[in-house]
Structure formats: C-alpha cells, structure tokens
Length: 115
Image (cartoon, rainbow, N blue to C red; front, side):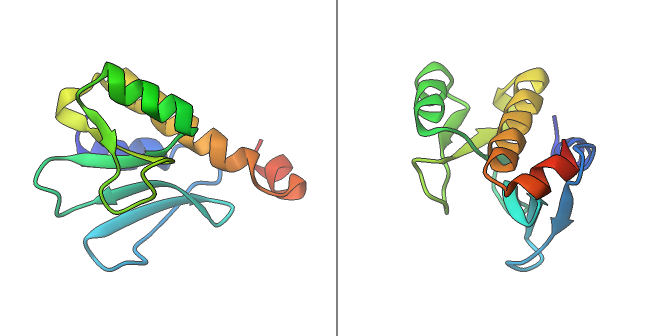
C-alpha cells in the first residue's frame, strides 16, 4: 500500500474524518473526534501509525520487522507500520483494529451512531 491507498481506505470506515491538526505534513484520521490513524507525510519511508492494545502491538513488533513503536506517539499504544515492508491485507486489518479499538472507547450514543 502507499500513503494515498491508506488514506482512501481509512476514509471508507464509517464516520471516519480527516484533518491536519499538526500542520501540513501530518494527516490524522478520527472517529467520534478521537484519533485512530496518523500519517506523517514527510517520513523518509511510507508509514502510518495505528493504535493497538499494548500486548497486541508488542506481539506484532516481535513478529514483523515492519512494525515498530511509533516515533512521536505513546509507544505502548501506537505502532508505526512501514508500508513497503508489510502486506496490504495486514495493513488494512491493523487500521480496522485501530478504528474498532478507538470506537469501543467512545460513549455509547456515539458508538451506536457509527456501528
């Protein structure tokens, strides 16, 4: 996957929005106002950062060289995915997992609106 494909996929998720709160070199995707995906457009290698349960993120880091602690984010929860090193289906799955994790933490009335 490339950055544009990640962006397009993220926007297919129900209720997902995109903005640039940190300036023109960062894309952020949210559900219910909460971030589930970061893309740093100036990264030397195409990457995206997804939020995963700490134990899942740790396990993926041990299994895949293309999954590392997120550079500018909480390293227990956020994971950088190096897109050129990973299978597209896995990248999509981890974006969905991040989306669902953040969705699960929203207030019930918001969750119901997006489910």
